Image 1 (cartoon, rainbow, N blue to C red):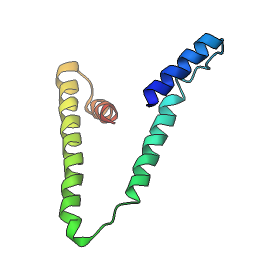
Image 2: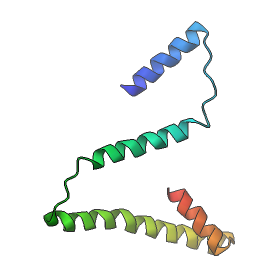
Image 3: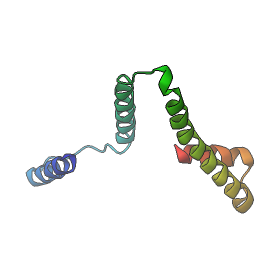
Image 4: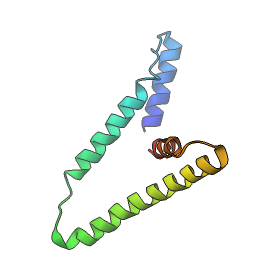
Length: 98
């Protein structure tokens, strides 16, 4: 539905002669803030109980372990095959995964 609305607004704007301001710098920030707000709102509905600690730990580890694995792989590739320093490679790999 959002794609259709966006396409319709784009067609309307181009056919009526209005101009759209350049939003390329602002859109990623707005999108990131929107995603953070969605996740925060969903977290308010979570009821934490003692019997769900195992599931919580599995969920956290299934999110963190692949992240650490891919950062390590990318750092290894950048250091050994591209000739970057370790700290530069680690920071670049970390930011690339975010």
